[in-house]
Length: 339
Image (cartoon, rainbow, N blue to C red; front, side, top):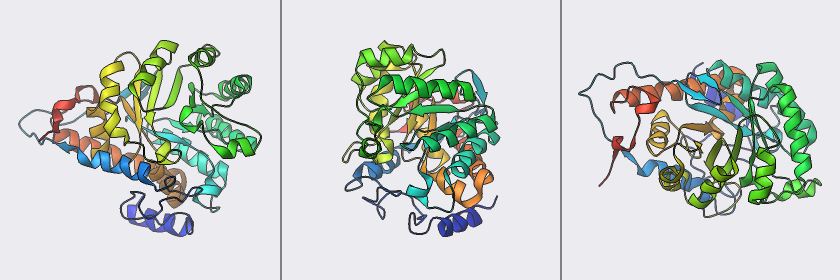
């Protein structure tokens, strides 16, 4: 699918919600929540983009990395790319009513699958929207479900069971949503979780368990201790707490503490295959893409989402050639340039 047409279509479809800027860095849409922006000053969103841009790559061309392998194994699945679709909900509220929730989440999950990856679904305050996400998993035959950290643990476990029946291959909770007021307004208050509560959640399912919203070493270690399979280093796209550091800035220290003990995923500010290469070099095992895939869904539905993932995977492969990386597993910090 032609990227120019995809962007132009998305801009028309998302009018009043997203400007589809040439550089999606959160500056123009700062404070637009609901919407596509970052909360408050928008600095947490812009920091994600800035942090990634601050890292540079060492170009190396004397090697035999001619056909890099972008495949990874994730949650028992063999994927063609380390890029997965992030859990996104609230299409009409945040991105415009040109797509309803089912159309949006189905495009994300099925488009990710067509690109050889896995799509994730989120859990909004409206129960019908969660059902839309589950339906997208049924259609695709697989997916990953991430549940908001409700105060009522039993309610979370019931939502896990629905995802298991729908065909989810992994489950988890996005602790970075622990302060969302909209959930409380809808009668479903959320909040932080203790280690004991996380253990209860992990033990409630036989599926791999993911904790999303980890931004410090101490909490990454706690996730290992409670038996989580994976963590997502994420500040919720800068949409929940102003003035947090960028994901790329906190990732290296987290990776040094828990690499090999838990799968490390990163989410925030990714706008190219080179950005993905940087996050992998900083210690991530895979990445999640949010806003660019929303643009893909509004610009071209399922095919639009696939187009974005394919584009980033192609760019990642090209960057691997020019940094001497034969496979995802070979990517390390030595490809990053330091002053």
